[in-house]
Amino acid sequence: MSIKKQLRDALTEALRSGETQRKTTLRMALASIKNAEVEAREELEEDLVLNLIQKEVKARQETIEAAKKAQRPDLIEKAEQEIKILNEFLPQQLSAEELRVLVQEAVQESGASSMAEIGKVMGALMPKIRGRADGKQANQIVRELLGAE
Image (cartoon, rainbow, N blue to C red; front, side):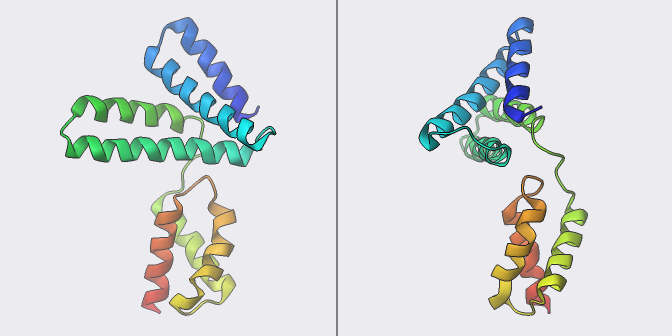
């Protein structure tokens, strides 16, 4: 079942059960997907839908950071609930250890030995982790490993 279909089914269920927060979050995610489809003038593939949901999660994480600075616990709680709802539709995230193993494999496969070759490593790594890990976190581990060698 496609992610869009899962989102629509979850929205229908939320409408029936009266879960306001869930309903609002799912509607925002579906609207984001619809806007991207209108902009692209075609239906989005699954990986692009996943990317949009991940962008929504990142936006909520940024909201949490801003709310912490503004000392707004109500906004923090709301954003955390939205992240929890959106994460239901994302693939299981890699643990830090699993990500480190994949990064080490990518470094060995690419034969990179210096920071100048970070692009090679990231190019080999990103298709393996797409949707399952944060690129920023992966980049940090790659820099750590290449800087240490």
